[in-house]
Image (cartoon, rainbow, N blue to C red; front, side, top):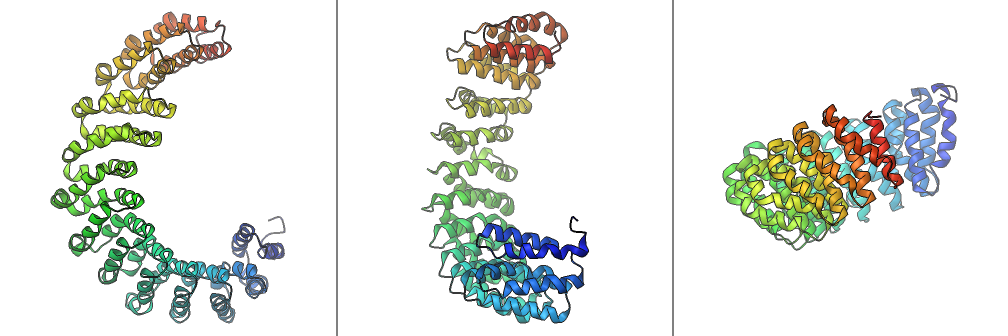
Length: 512
């Protein structure tokens, strides 16, 4: 707008053209991004007079930097120019796809799919396919793996009958490429490829290819393929889905459960539970349950954690009771894991587990764990445990809280460790609203008020903060007769932080 609107937009091209040729990749990419945006502001005439010549200059520049930048600009100007100019653009793109410099071929390969989308179908068949085939058999694996990405776009543009002859030979070759990076890319894009080529080719070609990727000699490839197991199975044609999974996929999955790489096992554990909804109750109990149980006993905490975090899928199909006997030892081990991040992750799944296992099972087996986390030596665990209690009370109700949780939390108010005494206050802050006025006034408030005489200033100022937090839950008489005198006493404390938070609480609760 500052150069006079769209008719003068071409004034911005020279500085961006020079920035698109610099050595620093980040700058070049930004310049190309800007050029792509302002190409939309050009009228078709301006596009041919000003923008298209810029693309040509970049495409035939002496330095590879300008040629790589040109690759990102073809697709934005192609749809809006005349047919003669279109022919020139296609020719330039062809030239860059066979450039001597690998960086340029890489840039061309990365934009191949995008360019194919704006081309007329006849040119996709005559031009793009040959370029795709050439790039997919380039000597550099970094170029070949980008051609795999383009394969998704190209396959989705072509009619079904052309896929077998034009795309599949190249895709088969990529799935068995000598470089693991190319095979990894195939595995990573597998679900998208599957959708692009349709059910028939999936059955005949992609199923064996997927089996090979799941058995690949490189752990990275197996890991990428394992991540796609659930999605791949979901997208199989419905009439033959179960048969394909049971005869071709399940045997590979069974092998991966005891893979030597923990990354592969962890990737599989994050999706394997999803197979139960696809295969139904009987198959899950017979074939999948033993695998889940094996993974719950895996020595790697991430594997066990991924199984536990996806339990809801299995719960829908067979109910969690089938797993509960193996589930418990796994949960207990994770809950006491030496790595605090593992402990943190299991806490976050506790409310979900509680809901599925029911209140009796929870009280009997898991309640003590939840209380133990409150005195963990890592603050993040204590904080998460506090939040966890609140979610449990929301699930199981105030009466359960009063009988089971509140007495234990309040008991910590007399703990010799001041950090544990402070945890009591944090729990009260979280629980007051969920427990309601009656429990808060009768049971929690007296403990908070008593703690205002604590020897440690940190505890005293947290008392002031707690009173401010639970104040809205209390009735006005309790505020006036019990809370106000304590806050006024804290407002004259010798410690300046205690003073500050007490005055803040008085102000917020409007007790002045």
